Image 1 (cartoon, one colour):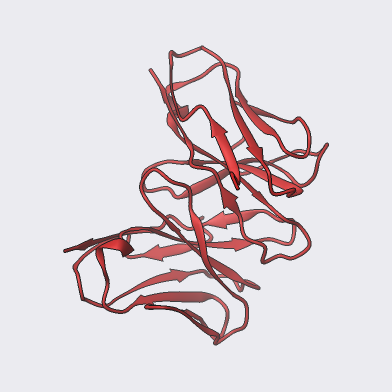
Image 2 (cartoon, each protein chain N blue to C red):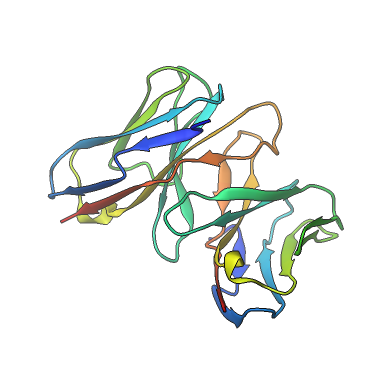
Length: 114
Length: 110
């Protein structure tokens, strides 16, 4: 099984450019998440979607927008990229129903903004 | 304010040594998850601890949840180079969001 698939794997943008990071999961999970990971700062939640049709802000939402296109897909958009958005972006999914259900992560998108 | 504090931040040891990493909070949490992340990959769940005082073993890894449910530890016996990675603790809220500590980067040298 593919699990959680993220595209692209790498991206370099100039300041002010826009792009969309794609994420798809094939585990029929209801909840999906976008995190960013910076050196020494762990994983910080950008946005999440508890179920199809709903999205909510996480800890660091400024500069980002999301779309829960359907149950499988959850995209993250940078409208005007800034160097502070240089990071590794991870998409994750989980089942709802129990507070202990694990997150299943993709392998990340490494974004550099110059 | 960091909800979860992990220590040490970095740890470099020789193959065969034992080690313990810690995850602490000033708040009580209902459960805690430990993940391992290898370079170039996303984190993968190792274990979930739920009950205060609980001990879980996964081969050479022993996870403990503090009696007061405010701290947890991960002990690795006879570390191997394959244990190298970033170890993250996380707690999940009832709303379904997970909050992560900053992690412990472990390097095991052959």
